[in-house]
Amino acid sequence: MGKEQGIKVAIVTGATGGIGFEVARRLGKDGYTVILNGIEDEAGAKRVEELASEGITAEYYGFDVTNEDEVNSNIKAIGEKYGRIDVLVNNAGGLGGRSRFEEMTTEFYRKVMALNLDSVFFTSRAAIPYLKKGEDPTIINYTSNAGWNAGGPGAGIYGTSKAGVHAITRALAKDLAEYGIRVNAVSPGTIDTPFHAQIKSTKPDVFASWKNNILLGRLGQPEEVASVVSFLAGKDASFLTAETIQVGGGQALGI
Image (cartoon, rainbow, N blue to C red; front, side, top):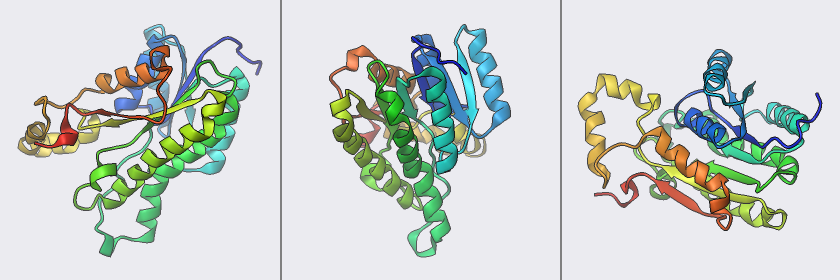
């Protein structure tokens, strides 16, 4: 394919639903050609159609962000097609289940670390040559309160992986500053997404009680995370790097 010169390109991993899709939509409205990544190809195709109906140019690339070879080949294909990458949003990640350390299998440990930390390393490393060719290039990662408080029962390795994301964000910022590539992170609090659908339907009282630990007294919306990602990607954040922004309504303080 020929290079699509002059088009600003944003890649959002894990973008077939939840926060990732709203981030993709917001960046599309900001004028980026948006590359959605995921592992659910049917959902990806539908999301691209949905964005197209809103006048947003989008493509879907199906690959597993924990698979080094798949990441390398797909990021290269995107970079070669457009000749640049301007924004990389490492949105993919998740709890991966719960396990206390005594019973934790090595397989579970490696799965959660791969999902949350390996994925950031693989995608960032692959994108760097193309970010160097971008305009105001930036990487935006996702950490969590669990990176500071080590997570709830059974989520200790999730917290460990997110602490790693906090550190790799700062390390990448140091490493890439000479190229003008900024690297920051967002730390979403409890956001009302399909991620919580099961507990919302089976234990509505528990779900409703979560807002009691948030200073602003409500759960966040995906669009509220997307607006912060939009800010970090844009010129208004041109002097921000190595920072983590809490997007949690004051949840990090605890009440």
